Image (tube, rainbow, N blue to C red; front, top):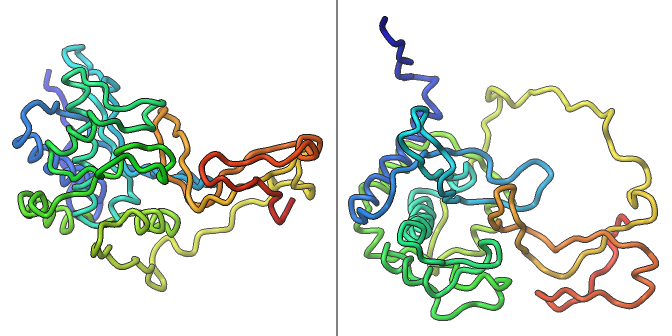
Length: 282
């Protein structure tokens, strides 16, 4: 009996497979320089879910994929479609960031705390090893994320120049998201220029989709009973994603509160140190 093998998809329907092959090639090249790194199951998709204001650029999730024959357990490596819109250099920076986490896992080095939010000095060492430049000190303004904001070095860009060029050439589809781009611009390296915004051409397939049904719209009372939404003064904030990781988000932190709680005195944000206030629509 011959086992059927799915044919390789080529041509106009190979959009997703082309992206994954480019990302896998980039990871294999990183592994060639750092043999401790494991092989991974590479995936991509939305880093920001509809209705949410947080975006995940990438993540390394150890031990999440198991071979059907039980012979291996491999980590998941995720690169978001919003990341793909930022170009090869930024994609490589994120892959190297996740490579630092992967090295920490392989070597048994604890490199984060607070549910993956705070990146400690051990992470800074691992990031430096893979070619990133950690900040000189933990930046309190980044909502206690420690040494997370590691930028790719010029020498590393040169080392991976061919891979970066291949990423730019191979990633033919991406997710253009204004909120994600705003977050990316705030974390740009000095002098870094992100690729231009992709503008959908008139008449492009998929632009004339029907409107969503309106039967599930919110009620006329935005307070949802006695509770109301209050916001702080943060321009960006951090949220936990479905996998327990941490994601950047545009806009202030939001919490639900009752009028009685607000009557008891101001509620102050511990990040921006400004009082929470009622949203304009509340």
